[in-house]
Image (cartoon, rainbow, N blue to C red; front, side, top):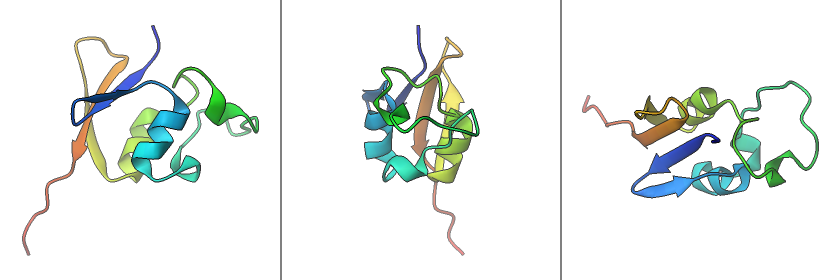
Length: 80
């Protein structure tokens, strides 16, 4: 089983799908420092550093029952 991210009842399973959620391919943080040019076309999220990617996108996350499941939500706005 590969990693997945669920946000607002939609599941994201590929780098391309996740990039659409977070604002583009450049917003993905990869596990390896040298990423092949076609990495975003990979069929699973295993090459993406999901905690760092979600944090950079301003999303709060938690694991599901399976540690490969990530549940993301927008960070709440705290009034000044």
